[in-house]
Length: 356
Image (spheres, rainbow, N blue to C red):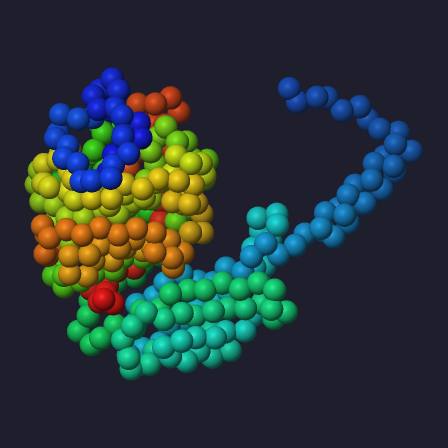
């Protein structure tokens, strides 16, 4: 949701002021290659020797940057299994197979990474630790009670708008005044190309319980603060023609102090929303590899980043709706239009079991 700082308050200019209390906004508020000589035999020999030394040096400095465990989150029923796998991300950006030891809570896990959920619902962890113990990564596992609704996707299909066999309801296709979400090659992105507050929106269809949890892995590159590139999680959201109601929990794709976390209530009409929480600072920015979560339990909405609680708000307005996702982009500032593909989610999970 474009609650920018500063975001356009009109077509010409909008200011996103810091908010410590809920604020109401109406729909009127917007925003030559060089030629190489043939080398002599001696020069060629020297060049080859230097190249060999450089390659050897580069290989010698190649190091493991981090362990990457996938999936980053999983919702499973008691007794259900889930495959986990770990790879190593190297200092040059490539990935390589690595040996890890797995550990888990709330169930058991084999040396091959197959997790089997126990019988007690709750939020648990799978940990993959490098064989020498110097690096590790953790994924979240939610063991849900029988009858809970669960959904998980890695966006493997190429779809615009996203459908996944009719499971998604889009803000452009159905809501009309907003925009759609697409998926391709393991990435979901938004397609907001025009006016402010027309956030790309997609929520899951069907009937969901009121307590909900959404978790997603972030992809973000080349952030531009003036674009207000937000990754959004939706809770208790209903999309219908010319109306979207529900709750949004958003993080800004940013590496600066301009980053923020906001929790917003959507009241229906385009541009009609209420800010429930607006908190700013570098710690609220997200980038590739971050895992964000949002829950609603009763009237309490909670935001997490990499398993750490980052903010909370209370609201009693909406008691039903669906979980989903969204993306915001302010297009007016120079360099912003067309950057939709620079940020999104690489996987997404939702459940209507939220631990109180």
